[in-house]
Length: 234
Image 1 (cartoon, rainbow, N blue to C red):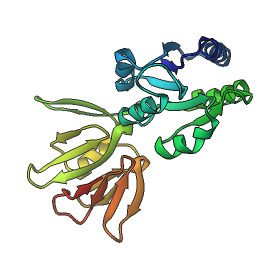
Image 2: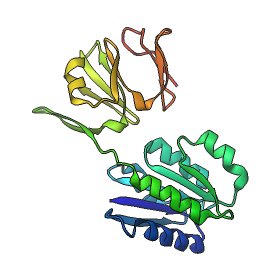
Image 3: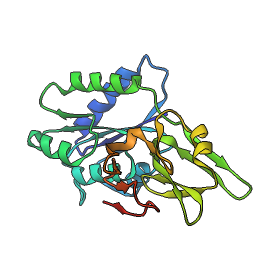
């Protein structure tokens, strides 16, 4: 199921977006649904937090209420690093600000500049991509974990608890496995960069092994030379 989350306060454009999406997916076998919001509310908040299904956001920068489109974009990326975001707006001067402050925007489309053709092209590209829902699964008598591999930033050995710590974008999980054992459960996006650390290469923006650190997409700097991997900074 693809969730199209449309955030716009103009009914004219909302109707246009729905029509365009229906046209693009008419010959597709993909199931999809629309979630329409004219302002930020608790229902939108819950959708943003739910990463169980593929989402495509169509967001205008100028909407009703206390939260601006930029505020909503920032919250989306705080909770969700993988859903696609297309900004459709009349605020053409915001292009640089959006791309500078919001991670991984698929496109910034000006509503007044042939937006239908551009949006159709973008949607076709997005839905042709394989949605990544591969999970790391770990079960014992006391613990049952299922973590999307795309959410894992890195994994390191905690020398105090003598367990592995799986660091995700929003949480940490302890598992009683060795580095060798967990690598067998992961796919090829994960590499061992240190005897006590495994990284998800898709989530690393800088690797500097000569100086003993890497930086994740969340801005976290991890010092590989620290005995306990505790010198983590943002």
